[in-house]
Amino acid sequence: MERLRVGVVLGGMSSEREVSLNSGRNVFDNLDREAYDPKAIFMDGQGRLWVIPWQLISQNTTTDITERLETEARRIAYEELRQEIDFAFISLHGKFGEDGCMQGLLELLRIPYTGPGVLASALGMDKHIQQMILRAEGIGVPDSDLIHEDQWRSDRPGVTAMLLGRFKLPLVTKPPREGSSIGVTLVRDEASLVRGMEEALKWDKAVLVEEFLEGTEFSSIILEEEGEPQALEVTEITPESEYFTYDDKYMPGRCRKFTPPKNIPAPAVAAIKQEAVRAFKALGFRSYGRIDGFYLADGRVLITDPNSASGMAPSSFFFEQAACAGMLPSMIIGRLIENALVIHKGKNGPL
Image 1 (cartoon, rainbow, N blue to C red):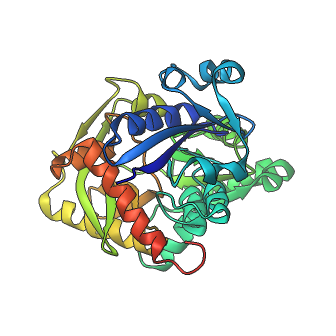
Image 2 (image 1 turned 180 degrees about the vertical axis):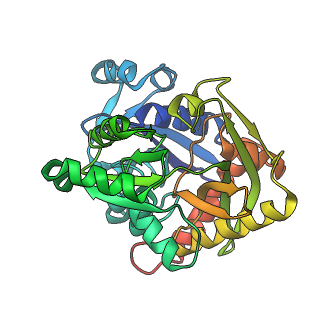
């Protein structure tokens, strides 16, 4: 039987391009060669697509790859993608890849892909809109406020006074459409509030200001099986820093992860899974997703960051939780592909 041509799309235009490279490389390595014919599709910093050989995938950074594209890779136009692949495994992270942009392109090209469709992918990147939807569904989320850049620029003293009056210190500032804790600041006083607002505005046109949560952080992978989302085992997160920073997420030895949880009681784990599935459904996610949140000392479960995609480096939550379910990396990757093919076959219009 002819193998399905799977394009692993990696790299990209966002601040998370290096995370994408690690994810995509691992997916490419673990694709079952008996069932799939993998091809690495690299998106460079200008959004151009290149078919790259393994010698480039193995490079350490996206900059290393970019410097060798002209001599060692093959450039393809967007409209030529359908001639190269039958299916797209999206390993892009962040803006222009995880937020509905790539999903919209693939819909126009009639290429099925992993993860949810255009709208749900966009919601998966916008933390403010996520919270509005989840709150309306009765799902617990942090107390927050969105401050637009023009508000901040025109009345910084007034906005500062309003925020310090509304939120108890410490609080958290973050860009609403970034991942991997990029642009996040833990605010302890007025000076760090100003720094946090300015840092977040380097990445977006607004700042999401949130209450600081004291509790145990968790992550829950959701898989859709025959149209019904199911939670895998929950991971408990114990970062080295005061919050889960970029270095804690990606530097070896900076964070302890327990799958299944070590300090969250069994009834709370069951409640976390239930709330994670509710969030998955409320945001219209399909195929799979990663729902992050906090278990608080008073027993509440708050959802802080629903993700329409997940990092897929070897030590990621995704593979840890799949391992608890008895699935090797090649098995869970294959399941994502086969589930997505069924979902796309059954759609009426864009996913």
